[in-house]
Amino acid sequence: MNLPALNEVEVAVKSADLNHLKILHLSDIHINKKTSRNSIQELVYLCNNCEANFVVITGDIIDCHTKYIAAKLKILNTIEKKVFYISGNHDLFYGFDELKALLKDFILLDNQTYILEYKNSKIALAGLSDRFSKIFKIKREENKVINFLSDYENSIFLAHQPKDYKFALKANAKLFLCGHTHGGQIFPFHYFVRIFQPFLAGVFYMKDTVIYVNKGLGYWGINFRYKANSEITLLKLTSKSVE
Image 1: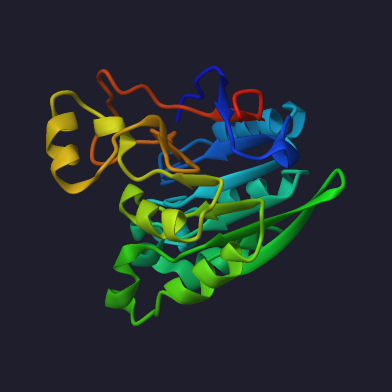
Image 2: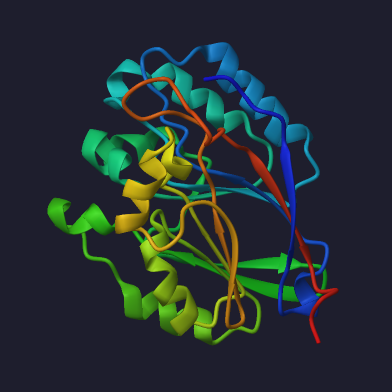
């Protein structure tokens, strides 16, 4: 896992209360047997020393059974900022209960809610377990999440797959963060991914919601990317374009 340079992206949100909020967005890290401890420590260092208010990880932290990478995963607990995360399909497949136990200092938002204080405002955060949850007999509590977020002016919704943007719109969330696509990982697979997902990568604006699809940090299948660079993104929220 080679860490790319920090990608700083400014997004305009429909909320003056979220102005200047900074979120470090990670996704699809895909830690496996070949992932070096040094690369994880470098990632932790970046998290600790960037100017983000908090960190979010939108799924697929692991890409093998946790028993092979437990020591590496424990390094992530040395991230000093608040870390919110949700499950991805790979996390569920390789053992999400074990992963949760190892990431003891992270805040899980699978079908969960959280209130974060920012300056003089409250930010509502919530997430859904991955769409593959049903295979593992895990219920996705869409109505719980939508109803919770709808009650707050400032809200952020996390899900692994871009497909779940519809729930963000129903909840009138100001920001929807996701991953899963790897930006296609290897061109021309970009076109194949777009058959199944409404967005490939980057920033999209729909109604009052900003959508950000992270291309992810790791790899799936083979350790190679083409025209879909890996990313670690610092989202800088601004209300300057809000009328």
